[in-house]
Length: 503
Image (cartoon, rainbow, N blue to C red; front, side, top):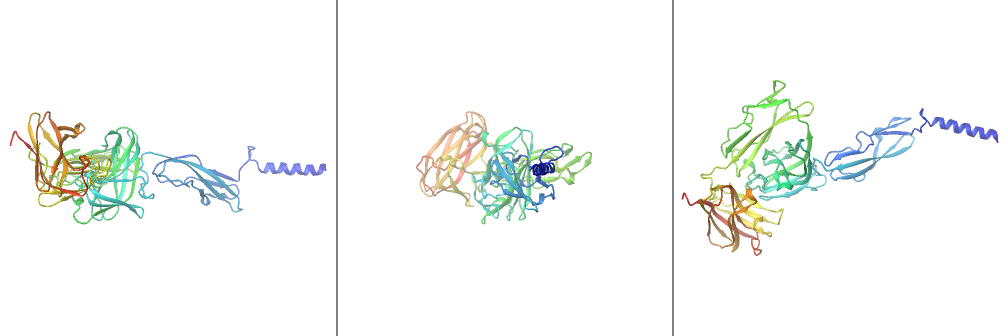
């Protein structure tokens, strides 16, 4: 009996020695690494197996055999915590299961930038145009029936992006258009009247083959709720839709933080240019440009993003970006801005008040954020334009034909003249307001004016009680009094401002 106990004790002792390391602690069969908690910025590409390794004490590395047992429904597009489980099995059929915590946080990137979740996170807004948005083959497809007259007339948007003060962010869009339609990316601040954060818009003409659009922005302050916008309204000559629809196909949208290298100088060009429509036919973005890096001229290595139009349909600030990319993936960049204006004979006038150039100068404004407005704007080609109001929504201002930018002088007398008719009798509002002061009335609005099937002329005469540099006139075509019906067409022949002091 004593001999048996000694044998048992000896076997236990040998077993204990065999299962202990030099430090006296138990050594597992498998040794894992890379299982520390990982913080992920929403929208960033994530490989759940990256940096995870496992060693078998007897067989060596089994890293290539690791499998994801349970991804806990992981999605880089949905903020939250995920407990991902991994499994390994060696040649002797011994297995081990370990887990890793992933935390997806809202940050500088968009959600669903590759559209693997269909349209999740993205909203189509066409306040001045007409378009539809769908996802096909994991591409966002936008069919454009009318691009309006302004860059913001069609928007693909998403809110909730976070920027940190002083950081530089790069937006990359991979897109194409068989019709050569243009695209522009931008940022707005929903907490401050949706003011645009970038200095205008950087328009780029697309081609039938997918290409990459890049835009750079340095955050002037920290923002907790940035609105990311892809503009598809009218920016360049090819954007005008005549007959067949235009189609823009977006493969991906991504925002990432980039490092800026300040060792490059951009010289020989005017950073900000003011020009009238039609005056930039011969401009070349490289004219006069000299780019130096550590004393060497590297101008030919600079990439240029953006196009500047010769002719425009609405005032706007275009810009192009010069980018020099360094071997360490940092960048140097400079922005050149072009403030484009439509010409007019006198500062108090509106542009194209007789509609001889269709909708040039006029904004087709359909607000769908606050209502359900829908309308089709048509250039009749005879000096008149028509607006078919398909959905009057619940306020007059949800559908407008409007134009801002008139300069009025204190004490001067002005007359706003509107010549209009309708397919059936309906009411409209005519207003003169100051967009720079919360759209305050410059003169009392003519409310619920009745328009019949024959041409009707309305005139508002008033004295400017102050100086105004950006007066706006508008005819409101939504539900101005709660009594208007859908599917009524109004036709406008003239919408002008006259100054009594000179006429």
